[in-house]
Length: 225
Image (cartoon, rainbow, N blue to C red; front, side, top):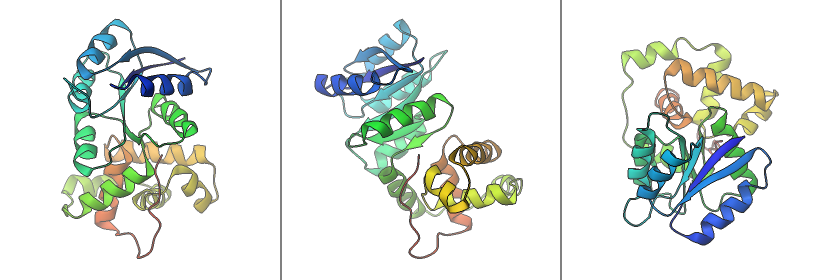
């Protein structure tokens, strides 16, 4: 059973998310909170695996709440859920320790899938967020360090191929279709790539490979899961 806490200042949003999540027999909503301060209190009172956290809330916002939650002795994974996709919120959320970032217009089935992915140790980012943050951060060109180049060299040819497709913003399903393999196999490759590169999420990996191998003109950078 995946134990989830919902953190949002809008009661209607909390109710809607609870309804969506509890429609899955493997997910249990164990707590709700209306701001970041209440979220940390609830997290201590009710052990949870994942916290879905809004960014803009009164008193204590979602970024501050994420830092506090991730600093706990047994921290829950944090997935930011918001209507906003401005790059400063995305990058701040990732720096604060968020595992994922979903827009509130994400279809219910994708929200459920994201919870399962995070519970399995994967990161999850909304397609629009992935495309936006990669393109924005690439404008601040980063020079690869010797360590990053050395880690890239540890990848197998197949892992490098998967990484290049991740760099184009493709989802695991898209990559599976492109490589004529299963989505489970792609997930395995992505996990290995992140481990070898010592990254927490696929946006970091995408930025790295895009600094080495820029996406070809007209390539589809549509989504990431």
